Image (cartoon, rainbow, N blue to C red; front, side, top):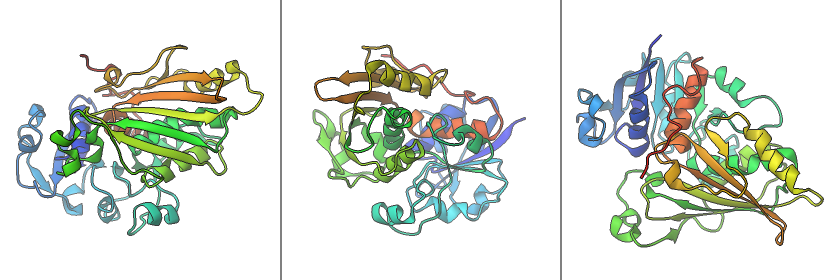
Length: 347
C-alpha cells in the first residue's frame, strides 16, 4: 500500500531533508509540498538538490491544502504548527517536526517558548529508554507524533540509559555540544552568516536558557529521574550539519565500571540506529552525516567520579527528519527502517 504524503515547510532545511529521505521511501509518496514566502515557486527553486521533485510547486500552508493526505509532515517554526494541526482530520497521521507538541508542561512551554500551548503528542524517539510502557507501542497506536528537538534527543539518548539503570545521578548533569548552524533553520541571521562562523566557534543560549532543556528533562523523567538538573551549553561550529554532544554525570557511589557499560549495552542492544561504540572508541560527526544513525562513546573518568558520554548525530536526519520518518513507519505498521540510511557519506 502506498500512503499519500504532504510536507509543510518544504522550502526549509528540515523540510528539504524530509523530502530527500522520502524520495527513496517505497511506501510514502509525496504529493503536496507547501511553504509560506516561497509559495507559488517550483520546489526545486528553493531546493535545487531535490531533482526528483522537479514538477512539484510549493503551495500555501493551509489546512485545506494539507487535507486529504494519509500522512502530513510539518516542518514549521514554533507556534505555527499548532495553528494548522487542530484543523486536520483525526485519522490523518500528523508528524510535527517543530516544537509545538513536544512539551507536556504548559509552565515549561510558557517559560521557554511563550504563546499558546497546544498540548503534548507522542514523542518521536523510538529508542528512548523508559521505566514503564514502550515508546514504540505508543507510536504504533498514535496518529499525532512530535518529532524531537535535535539537541534534546541527542542528550536524552546519551544519558537516559544511565538514569534508567540507576548507575548515574540525576543531578549535576552537564552537556556541551558542538552544533552546525543548519539546526537554527534557513532564515537569514547575522550570526549564522558564513563570514561570522567560518574559522570560529561561539556558544549560544548560555546559562540555562536553551529551549531544549525542558525537553531533555522530560525525557529523563520518563527514564526514571525525579528532578533532573542539567547544565546545557551548545556552541555553533563551522560545519553545515551535525551535533557532537559531550555529556557527563556523577557515578552513583559503589557502581563498578562493568555495571555502567552494561547499562548502555542493554539499552541499545539490537538497535539499528543507535549504536554504542566499542570501549575506547569515540564518535565523529563525519561518520553520521546523511545517516539516521546516532553513534555513542562511553568512558569513565575515575578521578572525577563521572561517566563521559559522547554522541554524534546528523541534526537534520536522526535529529529531525529521520526520527520523524522512523516514527511514521512505526505508526503506519511498516518496517521501522524503511527508507532510512544507516550509512553516512564520506569524505
